[in-house]
Length: 225
Image (tube, rainbow, N blue to C red; front, side, top):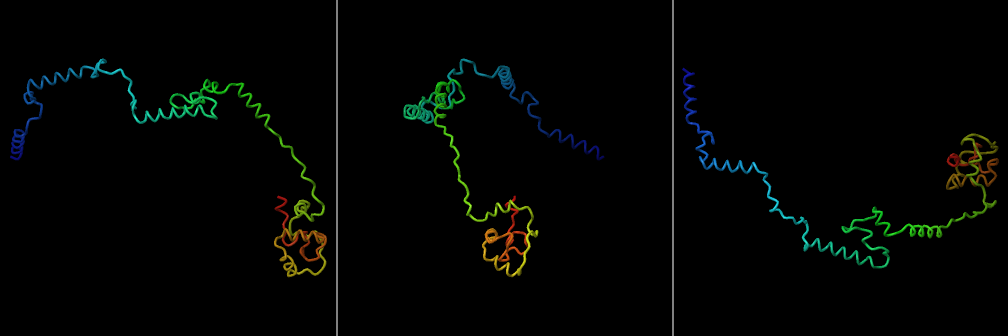
């Protein structure tokens, strides 16, 4: 029973559905549509391009002759031509750039037109005439009375800091060494004073209590390096 009812409903729906467009040639306008289709097929059969007679032979130009950009280009060319006749220019602008204003430095013929081989040779000769070799001068000799040289002293020694080399006899306390070393603004100045006062063999002020030859924590390693 249910199967029969379903088949009846499907038949009714099929009868009510509209016809698919263009299924019936009569719905397409009959002979008119047939003629239109024939014309379209004929047009598609051709190449679709205009005949050569209808195409202009004039070259296309992005800029018109009276456009502002063209006028600016003409003004620029006129300015370049005007500067070519002034001082400081030995060649006309046409030798340095082409009609579009592009450099011609890579064009050998254009470069040859601007400067010949003989001119290059003359310029090289002038540069050689102006070339001057500066001879070194004597800087003189160091006077003998400048005092101790801590750089020369550091290079003359080889033992590391803290190695006893010289005997120290006398009363040398840590407080005395710290007090005397505090008088100097740097270990370098303390070492200079130490050498000037008889060091490294003698140490009257107790600047080198361990006898390594280096006063007030002075280190010769940086000068050796």
